Amino acid sequence: MTALRIDGKAFAANVRTQVAEHVTRLKADHDITPGLAVVLVGEDPASQVYVRSKGKQTVEVGMKSFEHKLDRDTTEADLLALIDRLNNDPAVHGILIQLPLPSHIDSDLVINAIDPAKDVDGFHISNVGLLGTGQKSMVPCTPLGCLMLLRDHFGSLSGKSAVVIGRSNIVGKPMAQLLLGDSCTVTIAHSRTADLPAVVRQADIVVAAVGRPEMVTGDWIKPGAVVVDVGINRIEAPEKGLTEDGKAKTRLVGDCDYASCAEVAGAITPVPGGVGPMTIACLLANTVTACCRANGLAEPQGLTA
Ligand code: NAD
Image 1 (cartoon, rainbow, N blue to C red):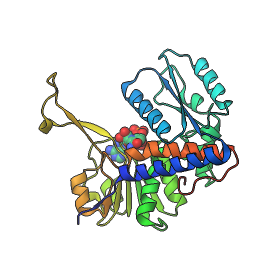
Image 2: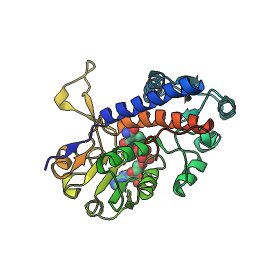
Image 3: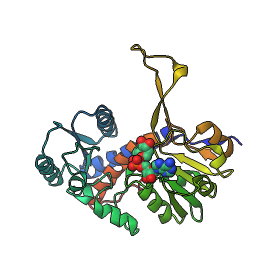
């Protein structure tokens, strides 16, 4: 079998189009423009790339982007004061604090200072609790993106057996909650799981969120299962030659060995071009959803859990 390649890039473009259409209607019918504030503390190069990309895509769908770049040595008190201002700013409907924060800042304290209604990352303890109890919440972007791809593929997920590999608060746990919410039978596997390949082999749906390059191989996969690869790992790629300063060039791979998994799976997301593009698309979707909720207006259909 050669698996269907799930095109997350195209799906994300479609989500952005739907967001842009909703933004246009909000402006025309209600004179409201959704706004997203992104806060970056420090100069971490990867975080700078993410923040730039978020700002660019926010503007492209017609929303307002407010970027706050703070020095690495910003105090926790100053960051909390900024969050307080953003919480009270009616032009801001979504607030995202780019993680990781410098070690002198308590991330949990900062995340939980965000107004839960503006917590478009879905990491505030209130949103975690709402999701866990099946109530309307802001849903973390990466798992929401995976859910959208799976719903699109299957229609209904009800009764499917799902294994989520990884138990992080950002991906693994909320992913499991979302699959449970769609009536899957869910197993969460992690670094201490006994006989992981045997556990994964039971699954109709495998979501890998581990951070270990190409760990999941085709012999772990039940024939016809759908594999969603969240992992983003940079590995050396000697076949690409050397960089100008003599170092090995690199390439991105997921947590699944694409070639061997694709021989057995029914469908699989590639890396890059699978889950990755869905994350920012879902951030934009969450921002427009937050804006509609804040104004008592109908939410866009199909853009949340
Ligand atoms: P994390 O390090 O917080 O969690 C990793 C999880 O994997 C842990 O729960 C751990 O128990 C489990 N694990 C580690 N080794 C294991 C093993 N040998 N067998 C089974 N389980 C094992 O990571 P995270 O933040 O959840 O991210 C996971 C991966 O997803 C990373 O590669 C990250 O870069 C990627 N990621 C991608 C996106 C995206 O937009 N596509 C977003 C977030 C994270």
